[in-house]
Length: 391
Ligand code: RFL
Ligand code: PHB
Image 1: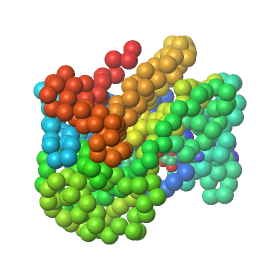
Image 2 (image 1 turned 90 degrees about the horizontal axis):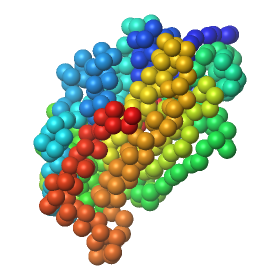
Image 3 (image 1 turned 120 degrees about the horizontal axis):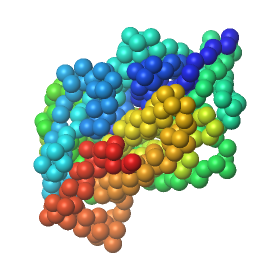
């Protein structure tokens, strides 16, 4: 069957859904193709921390009612090193805050707004090929229920994540790839337990990194640095709690662990995010290690640029903003790559105590405890540099 729309979007993650809603607000139609089911994307556990920029954009889309009701506002966080702790006071240093609200809750809110606003989302639709990119009518081919379909559009939003089709569709010679694969991973848990800490704690410990985060007053989100070849089934729940307490340096309220998984840590990006009428956004174009809590926020920042470019095109018949899309995004992408890499090296165990690298790591932490300027650098990157910074 043949379908058509103005903007064909691949992927119903935060990037694709936000793009569809921004376009709809400007009167531009789109269809989202998503290869997983609605239940699957709504229950996929990932990020939890929203920058001020992301929340403001969701406010402008009127999709943040539940976020403001259930989200937790944090005015600071702690960074600790072998038991010594420093608070980073976002409110004082930047006059901004961050909000803790699970990515799957964001995705639920965005999907329900899409339905209310008559935006078509086709779940279990697997995009298999994108053609005619250098014409004014690109086509996305997809399969649904073993049937072949095509979607003709004016633009393609490649919002299909790290393993998607869009990046593979870019000509190899059109971009350079940059990546770091870190020699450690994160083991993350969600547990029904009341957090007995009020703000996030990023803890370096000689045994490895730990992060104490949360989802609500009843649910903890906690992470442990593990080796890349560690297997989740080899660690009992009790060992996980013991290790978290050891690294964080205090006793936690323990409760039932209802979700656990291991995520590899990588920094990845390409330096071109477009080809003809295909535009990549979010994880399809870049991955950052989660230590800076930036992946989802960066995806939404890309989308803000892409939506502005597409809206400008339809309103003025002018492709100028779209031509500069990659350049506009990359300024922020590089900044966020640097910050995420910095936080990763600051907080993870990479070498034995006493080595040169380890002494530098400790010196960075010590400097943090005496320099408000250094704290401010961290704070302004963490809460998110305003969209206008990268004009
Ligand atoms: P997504 O969310 O991966 O969505 C892509 C969607 O595309 C679909 N898809 C296809 N659909 C149709 N046809 C195809 N051929 C398709 N191929 C793929 C997929 O099914 C999927 O639904 O990408 P998007 O929208 O770019 O969003 C990016 C974010 O999901 C990601 O950056 C964050 O989760 C990263 N992240 C964090 N980001 C933050 O901003 N703050 C955090 O606190 C934070 N913590 C985290 C994180 C990621 C983590 N993991 C598990 C990777 C913590 C962790 C542990
Ligand atoms: C989370 O709550 O899942 C979270 C918070 C901060 C991070 C990464 C993940 O840096």
